[in-house]
Length: 410
Image 1 (cartoon, helix red, strand yellow):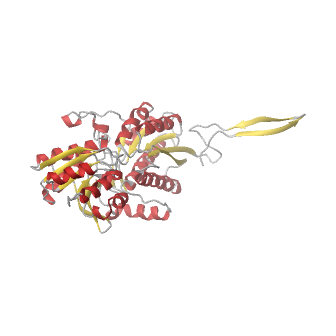
Image 2: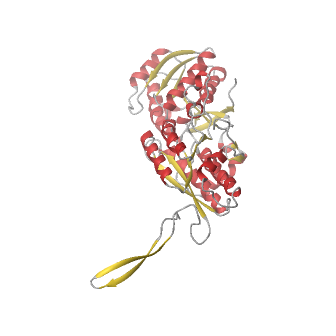
Image 3: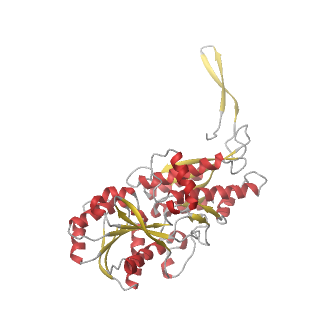
């Protein structure tokens, strides 16, 4: 349970009145929290817990929750009890920024996991960085978050030293998809669509550049409003273009209906997207028409990794109602990187949290190196994961099936 100020009240009955007298209090600090001698460390979590993207967000929350529970069960950091505080951003940058401020205001929060959306991550970065509060996203893939706005021009500059991620970036994911489609699937003519968001537009841009570089033809480009579920005009353009594949930069709430409408327009070609469509929800939304569609996602298939077997078993035992989805393993590893950092800081300070714990934890996250659910977990000089592996999945027989895993060929 979260320790908060405890006011012990004594009731004194006087003539015609009830007087409440404060007899004592317990300080809410990073010091001892109660008679057990433990100190409380809160890990904040920001993700869309309601709304269209809640399937991914709940998988992120549950997986981080599992990490916290296991750390406590194992007494992994002596003298420390971890707690998770999850806040809903509804995939909105403004909400994410407000949540970041709430985390900053709570001095027991020493690290944050999330968010899902790159645009939300962008809105949170400075707020958290100004407070030396570390942020580890399991899902943000926009390269600019770690390498600056000019990364695509060859100028890489890390904007915030407190920001890290366990997922690889669109600088890798987009070109990886292009190489697979051109070299393996033998697709030569693509129609590129994006939702104009930070994630979708960035992913589509890196895909398009690589596909053209390989010698492929861009049959057409289009932007859509993901809130509008009628994509018939775009579907007609795709059909008329003669493209043999569609690439979509965006997320499953729009991608599913888009795929269905493209097929109904007469273009019997696959829609391909990034990790934003790699969800069971996409299969529901695209229906039977979506069979044969493809998605890339970060890392290797979680069920094929020896390091992930324990996570999968423990997640099932945990009784979580929602699946861990695409980012579950990465969320667990994000939370665990903060736990590892807290452990290093506490052990270096005679078993206690130092007064500048936030800054020390942020620094320690950059030095973590352990075998996690998704494989080796460590970060480079930009705060990006050193694990660059990706996987192509095909919607087949009512589920996603891994087609190819590997890394980007330079």
